[in-house]
Image 1 (cartoon, rainbow, N blue to C red):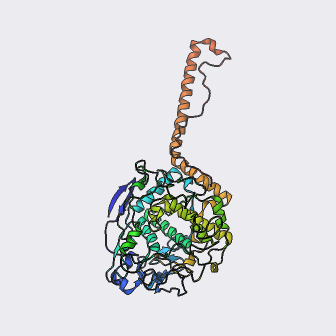
Image 2 (spheres, one colour):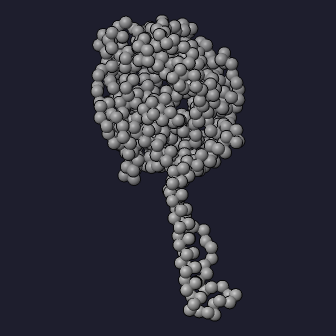
Length: 542
């Protein structure tokens, strides 16, 4: 490993490239052939931390309830009945613990014994101070350039690995682990040979698990950033895009402005201009009948607003968000893109945000943002390459949270069976290890340890809105204190000089001794404090 300076941030970069898989400790041929992923927890030296009661290695139980009719195959795709193709025994953790070896805490819990409950706050990105913006960009860039120590990606199917005896995996950065995960959950099913794919399948989109899956995705991404930086106060900010006239976060102090040299590229003044994408060529993988192998596929692309306006005439409005949240049914009918008056389908973008009808010629809500970005974000499989993805999905998740709080659905509201494959209530989310079932994230964010700033009560929101100003004051407080002291010294010095000069003049000009004011009398003035607004927060009301 080596210490490297990248855009003002020092970090340790791990440069070993052993061929292993997700999680790294379960990527050996031995683990794959035994179909067991129960790594040792270093805290007590036992598998799954069993000696400390953190968890136990047990058989994976999967639901056999029927799926929808969109996927008429069985035994052809590695994601079917996840994770049984790879592992049939994994760590199953006690209530406070989680992780592939039960070495971490459940979301929202902290401390050595995972007994400390904390609630983190996801804030409007425009309410971040300049220093907080710099930190966000720095953390993203650090994640993009640091090889992940715990997870790597599969570059071949289980069949291509000779049923586990010849592992095919690769190391990637922490950021790119999540790019690959989003690709892998949404990729076409490979049926064997070039061009032989099934496109009507997606284990994380176009059906009920869309919102729970992306909720878990953001929680794990947030956790990996905290582990990487040691900043356990970090939370993903959100982009409130309601009624926006354009990409107002596409500035060089945030997600990168448009390049003046090429409208499809990011401004050279932004660190994101140097980012390379991966898993972005879905048509090529399908034509060759292969998986994404994590190779560099060129620069990050974005050209917001220069899209097909017949499909997305404008960004979503506040009225459309309110209509979406008002829909009482989570999902309806076939629970796919044709679902009518379905909250999930309307929020995802395939139900008309004005009529609630599916199969609309106009795409809205969540999907409209992806199309509007007109670049890397516009490919479902490769969309997570653009860091705007995170801010966008944080706001989508907040709309999901609004709906959960307004309608307080029972868990039975989430479909138990006959949803498209991967989306039934008890299905394990692909490709997460540790395992998560869809229904476990059909709950309020409060139960998972986080909150959105615009959902706070009025007193809490005042504190949240003022926090960037307080942060700015803390940054400049030593300078302000010094300026105040200097100003006071200047004032005292001027007063002393004035007094001395006046006393001298009393001797020279006796006529000044009367009741008239001295010609050298100076009015009182406040010390001059020179301030700069270069670090002032860009404040927008919610």
